[in-house]
Structure formats: structure tokens, C-alpha cells
Amino acid sequence: KNLQVKEDDVKRLDAQTTELKKEFEENSSELTKRGITCPEPSEDDLELINDTKEMLEATNDKLTSELTTIDQEILKYEGLVAKKSEALKAKKESLKEAEKQLGVYEKQQGAKEMFLIKCQQENK
Image (cartoon, rainbow, N blue to C red; front, side):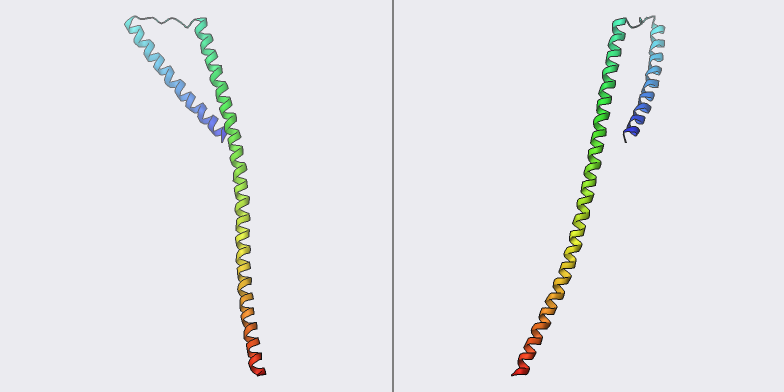
């Protein structure tokens, strides 16, 4: 799941990069037409950009790690639910079998009582 998320992120970032480059070229062209120049970023700007990039990458790594942990927990609980479901199913089947045996026992008790009543009537 996490690999798919990362692949989707890469595709999304590539699409955004392409779009931003296109917008940059359009903006640069517009500024040139108007005679407005835009200076290159200063060292301080580049440092801020790199710091921001590193911070975003660290945040992304942390979130990806948390997603992995959550995925593992979900799998763990799904396994527990499956085990409990199987145990519940087995108990239901055991209960059905016990109910069948109880029915047979009740029929045997009824037959026994009828036999005893019949024996008592014959002995009179």
C-alpha cells in the first residue's frame, strides 16, 4: 500500500512540477513583454527553499512511517477478528450440535416415560 502511495505521490509531484515549469515560462514571457526583470534567488532564499524542502521530506517520511505502522496494526486486528469469527462460528456449530443432542435426549426421555407408564398399566 505504501509503495503505491509513494508512486502516486511521485506521479502527482511530476505533474505539478511540469505545470509549475509551464506557468514559470508563461510568467517569465509575460514579465519580459512588460519589461520587468526578476532577479535570481539569493543565497538566503535558496537556503530557505532547501530547508523547507528538507522539512517537507522529513514530514513525508514520518507520515509514511506512521501509515506503515497503521497498516500493520490493521492487519493485526483483521487477523484477530478472523480468529474470533472462526471461534464464534465453531461455538455456534457446537451449540447446534448440543441442541440436536438435547432434542434426542428429550425424545428418549419421553419414550422412557411412555414405556414406564405402559409397564405400570400392564402390571395393574
